[in-house]
Image (cartoon, rainbow, N blue to C red; front, side, top):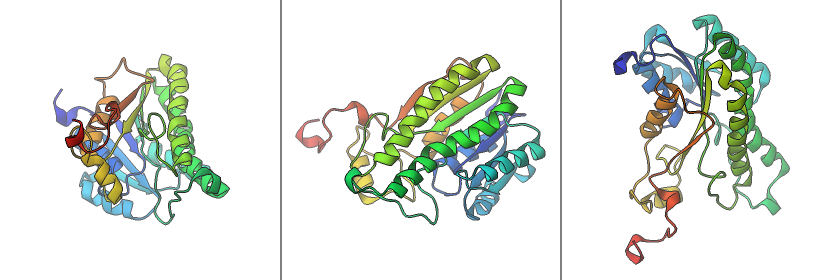
Length: 264
């Protein structure tokens, strides 16, 4: 099978694909180029620009949907199935940030209850909501690939002011493990990708500095994460499920994280 038809006859739904420098859009581009009919979604109309950039004709489609709103999630899934007849691949990339909402970074003692609820809703419930609606179609077809974009932040490491984000991303992995056991008999796999420092339009100055101190001395790229997502979404990963794949340039394996000239 050539790269061009790696996902021939497959239908993929990629959430959180609104940013042109983000992981979701990078993954969608790889899936489209490899033959998948691909639906991309985000919360703003910039998703229509991303659709034009995919330049895939009738093999790609875009929808605006707030995945924290379960009514909108149901309509999104119905729209995808109505257009393409099935959903074979689900990439849960939505989370972390949302256009029009300000991120809150506060220690727990000062963390507003509303900010906590929004963070859990955005980073965990979005994944649950869309996965729950897609599952019946995958079960019916005895086939499915679910790839969740978690993070090293929460499951492995963390930072001050990120209790909500860390909790949501950690819970996503726990949820995935249970689900993987439930649906394995239907030919459905569920895996997690856990990126470290990845360069994007949302990268803050301190994150860029952190990336410079990884063993590879650079941030990862959305395309590199997208390639891992594509592998887990393919038939090359048929016996892999319930797992977490860290992609962080070796950052979390190093004990010392200061300037390399002082130790490494």
